[in-house]
Length: 432
Ligand SMILES: *Cc1c(COP(=O)(O)O)cnc(C)c1O
Figure 1 (cartoon, rainbow, N blue to C red):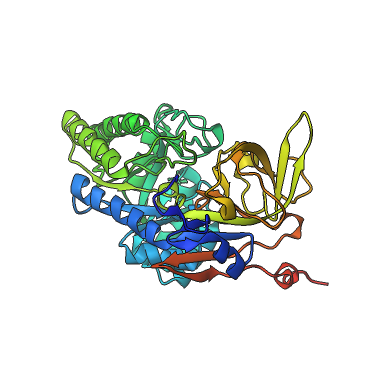
Figure 2 (cartoon, protein in one colour; figure 1 turned 90 degrees about the vertical axis):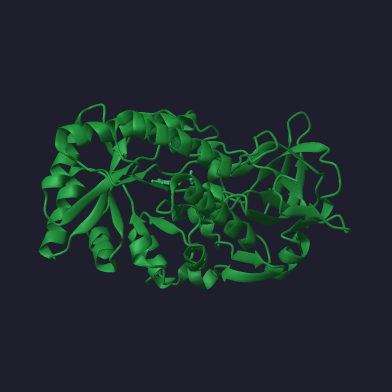
């Protein structure tokens, strides 16, 4: 199976963390997001251990919570000793509701509103990653007026193309994120931040993109960032205490994707970064990483019920399920590839290929095309694997379809972490 927590039982059913997927579908209804909590925790530990071992005891991972956000996941991150990234007032609010320690929150976003900044200051978040000059000045004024000094990191665009999908590549000069080194603006914003009241620039941040399989783009980013840190030290006397290298390590979505050893990748990155610091004559800053996808994606499986199996002679087969782009917009957005199977026929061979379609009034409402799968019929349970990241968090109510529940499984037990939306929820905010 694609992930270590998946198997097939004596009934020929898919099991997730030891639980029968068909039973889960029966118990919680479909569509449903099943998240293997034990796997999420194990991934958190792998990152934490590897970062401590290779970067030192002050280094730690921040969970980029936009990947999968609800109160219980913040509790899990807190219990596992991670920090978190939040990118909106809504994520901050959710983290607060979960009792997440504010000092371990890093607040992101390329266009934080005044309200976002005010909320972050009021909550006392540990660090705010400042994207641009306008935000720098707004935050400085706001914090100074409150008599506060807010620790910040400055978001820098190192000018890297990580060879991933354009929509998830974020480190090139022409980006809506951050301030570019190449144009001289990054150095200028550091100088400005050093002089402004109400803020304490403790370091730099960069995030080059997502779904990156090789460490080379990270090494390239680190090479550029460490050289830049040396330049800031020489020209401005800036002491960079923290270097946050963002997230982006890839996840295995299909059998064609390589298996990634995150601990090994972190170890190799650390060795290079140490060398780069020595080469550039700078002290090794505290290194932070911001994994999102690689902590939660593989732990997620979406269960659907098949509604129809349609064969168009000379064209293709469609398997339609009771979900689609409202619960998983990633194929529509990025042509993302997934692995699917019929959970109640998991022992059977995937003898056909089919397009898995949703139930929305859009031809683009697909989970995937030409997917190898078992022949299916109405009532079967279809499982789409590796949906833990950017599925629930990107879900919508398009066509007034209620969002599925999030079911956490741990130690052979399942519990509802987010209940299914109801039709009443859909009209709850409609007035008149
Ligand atoms: C999205 C994002 C991440 C997480 O990326 P993954 O590919 O999910 O690991 C980390 N940091 C920042 C700033 C991001 O925007």
